[in-house]
Structure formats: structure tokens, C-alpha cells
Image: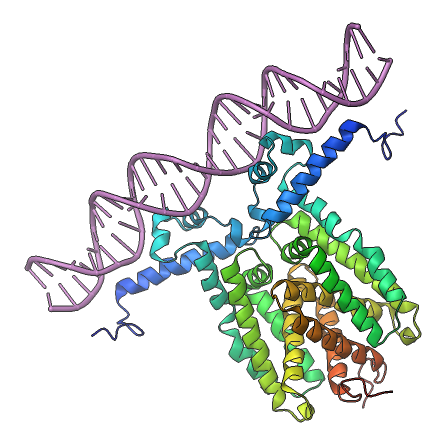
Length: 216
Length: 216
DNA sequence: AATCTCAGAGAACAGTTGTTAACTGCATGG
DNA sequence: CCATGCAGTTAACAACTGTTCTCTGAGATT
């Protein structure tokens, strides 16, 4: 039987197919610099690659399907990097620096991917919105799991930890978007660090007061 | 001379023109529930209104121009409401409740406007992105100006106040977007309040430590 | 060596798009 | 009361869209 489903012989023809597929993804990403996915046309993409319009169907059902693939390409490999960065730092200034540096490096290396995520996070294509939402929720859960291991998390409820993690993740996306909108990235990075310091301060004093009205 | 430029006689025909213009805006907003502005067609809008395609040009240069008008419609009247809400509350739990209630009410009353702003904030049409960015920056400046009047702002630099204000404004947009993505709004509102509490805590302890490395 | 598979090409389709031009008719200002 | 302005109409245009069907030719399989 075909156990060829997850690891087929990397035949010389499968390779060419994936090269075309990648070319379609690259071209789409490039075209999405100046429009939204919901206005990206299939012919537009194939024209940019130099293949026939019908070739598109060999790889994607429609442009929404291509968009979902782009989400995976943009965020898939980021999980391990982010978790590793958090694990290597404590809850302090070094973590703030490392986190901002991570975003700056990502935006510099993959600006088109970053723009795509920021744009389509609330974009007009439901499938893609949900794919990005799912990935960001996953990020938040991973960050929360890392936080839970740290001494500062003592006394925190799982719900509050997840809320905190979501704020960090959302802040990363917003910082990425802000970086894309400027050519002088230092002020943006600086502001992002100050905002993270504020979040850190909030985290440290979260348990100072009782969570609900206890008559004070 | 024509001093008719800012306040013409509200002729019975000017009224009809603005009715058509408003119908175009309404139809566009409705169509934008399931797509982005960059894919919104001029004919699509006029068809929904029941008017000839060419009538569009009597009101807007193109759909991007219409988008800019939508930004004004969505956010223009919100400035006074927001400032009033902040001015009527101190830096405490009541302000948090009032702010979240304000967003919830806005999203419930004008869901299409809220969706439009969240979607096009990072969308594919530069003119509209910049219009929204300008409005949000204005919001942040107004919030910062209100903060500056309060005793808790003593010792804060103008830059830090603006950074704090931006976090509040960005948080409002994100909360609005989260509310739109769910039909059970109470958990979202609750999370938003907890996040605001965290920001408030961060604000209160901002001056506890020196702003830059002083050896410690 | 003969066969099969399948990525991509080609042509054609019905429908859509933005934009121009010339028009109609009504509310308005002199 | 007549002439003008102008919101909206009608018709036509070249260009573009997604999708279907048919075909080709080179890798893979036997």
C-alpha cells in the first residue's frame, strides 16, 4: 500500500511541481504588497509567474486557499523561535530586548510575510482570518505555558495567564505593523520596549490587590 | 462672490444629492462586511443602491475616495464621546467599566463601521490606511492630553504619556475587533477589562524604577 | 520498451469591470 | 419666465475575470 503519503520518493517531477507552487506563493505575496487578498486574482498571480491561468488549479482551489498556505508559510516556523527566545530569558529587561529584536529581525527578513499577516488578520477572507486567528491563539497558549513555568506566575489563574500572553502576542503583531509603516525603525522599537516595560510592571503588581470587590 | 462654499442654501436638490451620497456610503459599508475595500467595485455599489454606475462619479472619484469618507463617518463623531467619557471618570475601576461599555455600545450600534475600521486599518488602500492612522493618532493625542490633566501623570514625560495613550487606543480597536468575531460578548468584555486593569497597574508603578540603567 | 499519470498549455465561454461620451429633465438663480 | 447648472441616465468601449474542456509531452511505473 501507499505509505507514500507523508514521505514519497522526492521524484524529480514532484520537485518541479513544488517549485511552481512556491513561485505562485512568492508572486502572490509580492502582489499583496499593494492590495488585499480579497482582490487578488488568480490570473494576476499566474501572469506574474509566467504560467497558464489553468495551472493555478493544480496547486490551489482558489486564492483563499493560497492565502491559507501563506499563513502557514509566514507563521509556521515562528513558534519554536518564539518559545526558545522566551525560555532563554527571564522576566526582565533582557527579555524585552530579545522580544523586540526578534520582531525587528522578522520584519526585516520577511517584510512581505509580516505585512500579509497584519493585513489579513482582520481582512475580508474568512478562511484566512480564521487561519491567522488560530495561529495567534496557538502562540498565546505557548507563551502562557512558558509563563506558567516561571516563579512570577505563582498565584496566577490560567485564565489571567492566557490574557497576559494574548496581550504580548497582539503587541508583537502591532509592533510588526508599525515597523512596516516607517523607514526609521528605532523610535518604533523604542516605543515597543517601553510598552513591554509597562506590561511587565502590570504583571508584577497584578496580585497586589484582590481581583474582585472585597470592600476596600 | 461665492461665500457659498461652506454653508450653501440647503436647497431641496442639494438634499437629494446627499441622500444618494449617503445611500452609496451605506451600500458600500454593507458590501464591505464580506470583502475588503480594495476589491470593492464601483458598479457593485451603484447596483446595490439602484443607480447608474456613472452616478458614482458625481460623489466620489473612486472607491478609495469613498473609503476615506467612510473613515470620517465612522470615527469623526467619536472624539467628543471618548474625551467626555475619560473626563467624567478618574483613573480607576469606573473608568475601565465606562471605556469598555463605550466600545461595546459602539460595536453594537455601528457594527459595520467598526468592522470597516478594524479591517482597513492595515488594509490594502493607502489613502484609507493613512486616514485611519491619522484619526487614531488624533485619538491618542486627545487621550494623552486628558491624562496630562490628572494627578497620576505627575512626573511623566510627554512621550511616555503618548505611548500610554496609544496603548489604550490600540487596545480599543482590538477589543472592537474581538467583539465582532464573537456572538457571546461578555467574555470578551471581561477580558478587555482585565487587560485595562493590567495597563492601569503598569501606569501606577511606571515611576517606581529609574527609566534607564543607573547601576542596580 | 510500452503504458500510464499528471503538470501545464491553449482556446474559448459568459460575465464583469472602470471610464468615456452624449443625453435628459428638473431645481434653481437672474 | 427663461436660461443655466448639474444629478442622474443610457449606451458603448476595451480590458479583464474565473472556469470549463481538450490536448500535450515528459516523468514515472511496470
